[in-house]
Image (cartoon, rainbow, N blue to C red; front, side, top):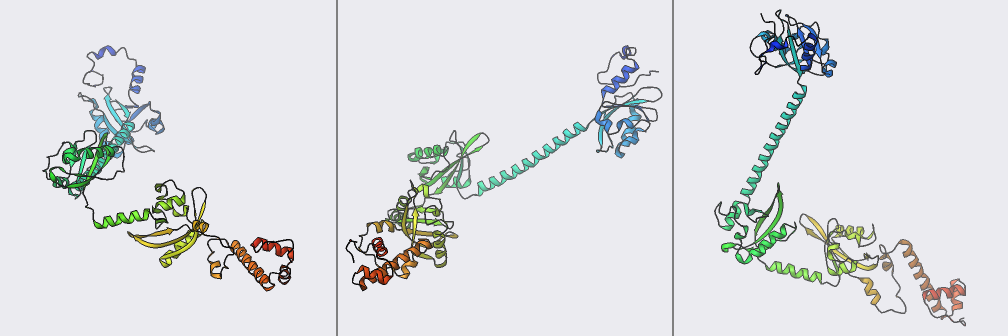
Length: 476
């Protein structure tokens, strides 16, 4: 009887007898050990008599310590029947099969793929195993990748369904145009109704066909400009076949490597008397001699006229639009907060004296008047800022200033520091007392100094400081 193992392969050796004398036991053992990551020598009762492990990681998992144990005791419960079946079929003449079993280990189950071959008449066998953890990890990553792709595909389909629903049910006429060829890729039903055509009539047609020939150059130029800039005002054109004027706006976007244009159409709004009135108001505000500014609830400038731009020293109105009003108006942390507090409490302020700081560091005295105005769901503030400093400089000078009242002095609060207000009040009282003493003594300065309780030299100094008459050496 033939003692060689019955291992049939799809393309087996045609004359295996020539190897019988060429392979020594040592060579055969080394060959079997190198074929897989682990090799088991099994006796007729499937007891492991020897183990060869070429994978160092399997050694650390305790695979080399199986000698003397039954093979089925070294596998998980679900693999016991499979091991018994493989050992029983190892002597069959049919082709041997690689089958996977799992071994329990401290780090978790270890999958090993075995091929079992009978090697003797007594029923002993050799099991050659290959570690399948790397392949299992790769299969797991492949499965996770496939599941992730499926989830992304489902999300993409959902997004596409929502986009299609919005595109088809939207009341706004919309076209998707190829930016390179200027041909219509998609058009929604609202645009078809506006243009008076059937579905499919404009598919892959030049987009210029939707516009009256007289306005096509303007329309195409607008599409070209939209490819280079995102913020373009709408252009008004007449549609083809007399379907009326519309406002058209376009915006570039990319889908993959293709550049597309989203073209939207709006019914052109006719100019009304209210529009003319608003335009006239805008012209009046722009040409006002006094500075005018409109700010939002956060005190950022929404609108300013030419007088404010000139007063602030900014190069253009665009440089002040969107900037905080506190950049120019009032002393930091003082005037503007007081003005806004008064506005929120009373709804308006009038003739509040403050300063306006120019961009070059110059300061101008101004008076602020303002009101609160509604704006959408919030509110805004409107201010006029006449330049009183220029008016004071051009006013004719007088020989004597009129005395200030207590009310006039209190109006300095917010315009001057307390120290400056006290100093000015002291100077005012001193001047009034000197003038009263000169009147009482009939302009006798020596007597005036005596009743004021100051020296003549001190009185002369104060007269000079307040500009109360010319001093001569012969004054009494």
